Length: 569
Image: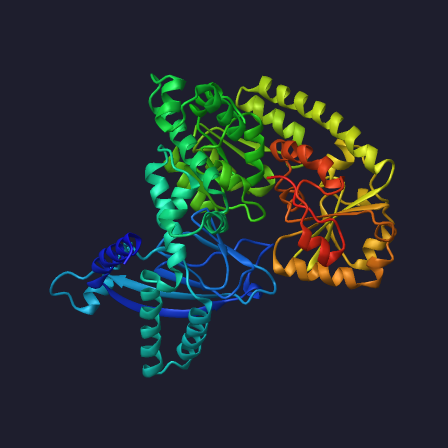
């Protein structure tokens, strides 16, 4: 038996001992489908007045648990404790989620079941969290449990209780996923020893995998490479030292977190955070809450990482990956949850959008901290300047805008050499919809890069659903098209390619369709309507139109006949 297996068994035994004396009682077996959700009209939440076990039967969905994003695939199993805020997101074609509610009791000696039931345990060591369980086992088990629960007979309910214990047992001990557990073990080791020099080869050997297989699995599971993760850990520790131990020099901090060269550390810090260490220290002294996604981009352009913010971006992992460790207080999209979180956090300032918060809640937020409500009708430049004035950082805003205008001028010349005077239609394929971008959504292209919009685009601000025939009606010379990175969107894209209307479009016949797949800069225009995302987009824009793009995707090119590209990072 390997050392890793021994440690796994020791941990499982410890977790098992802490749960051995607890009582479990299943209270409901439900199924949640996309058709039951209110999105996009309203937010949806799974009630968590007891423990909740969620099993995914789909790969096209996500959960947001207390502001933390959880991607779903078939077999993903998430155990939540009472009181956690759980927000589901499912595509229209998703098979849905199984939602099991159960009580966990920690009885005292001499307790009866009724006594224990009165005192439900609020946590279950070793049980809560996310696991990837074999879908061929857990999904049919949940299907059977759902059918039996609806029978309402004593025998059926007893078999459901047994099914709950089986699922919890698999969550505790999952030998079919030993490789994933090995990856987890290496990640846990990095969390403890990130300051030390460790090669990828050494880490792969610890996991019992080849270098290539280890690197691929690590990135697949955690959304970032192992070197990127080590950098993230070291910089997070450096930020802690900067704010907690002001007497330390930059050289001392660099050495303590694992870097031998102060200059290299300083360059790396600025590249990763967008600001020099000294500016980070200065700006982090003031705690600013970004109430909505769009407010994050206003603060980042002012070299301010929000102290509190929603980090459950459904269209990109960029902000969670880059700034997730800096955001001390995750926010959600529910008034009560946010209000309580902000009361406890006591930020110095709150920045929000007026349209997204009703007047009563605006008054409540003003009672917590000085609050700026940006008028949604104003453009993104005015939003940036208003935020800067509110935080006494006007110079930072003007400096950022000056650099942006310079970059936009350079990009404009580069793109114009390709596009010339052609009209450009922007289309996002999202799940079962073709969404055409309006004038305000496409402001970076139509206003800052001065590309010509097709006739009709100026008649709406954000997005408008369209059929293949309606796309053709725009008579655009070129199409800039993004396909969201989920199976439902890819299916819609395949249907579009087979349609006669698409094939007859001038841009298609003349091979002037610029396709990207999963590019977050073309996913959610209203959520990206702020300075920082526009700055990122301006860096990527030339590659959106260039031959080959930043990273050509051979499989996409062969399947669809387009030069598919993933732009940005």
